[in-house]
Amino acid sequence: MKGFFTMLFTIMMLAYSASSLTLSVGAGPNTVTVPTLLVSIYFLFMLYISGLSLQYTNFIQDLEWIQYFSIFHYGFTALQHSEFLGQNFCPEHKAAELSTCQNYV
Image (tube, rainbow, N blue to C red; front, top):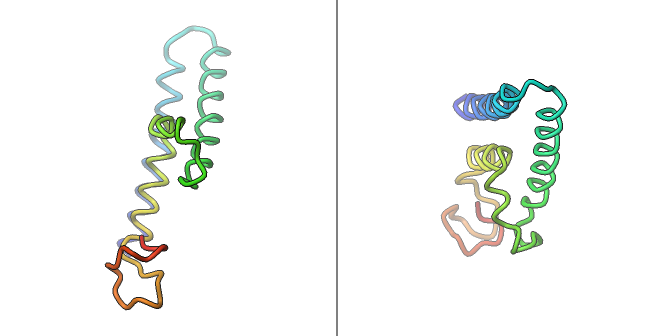
């Protein structure tokens, strides 16, 4: 039950932060097209970067810092933390705290 409400809270905060970014950008200028274009470009670029950064070994090392500007990076990291922390994905080892396992979370 605790994990479900943690996941629900994380998803709600991710949605609220994304919508507050669009509202704050849209509140500035009087025209509609410029903020819409800027927010659309930001979200498309950051979703692309978030998809690439899921595979840290294949991600370009020079562009690794870009993922920290993404709202989605923090949301996905929080979801991974709440869902997978402490689970044992190494059946050959009996302890979940063994960090030498390749699939240790």
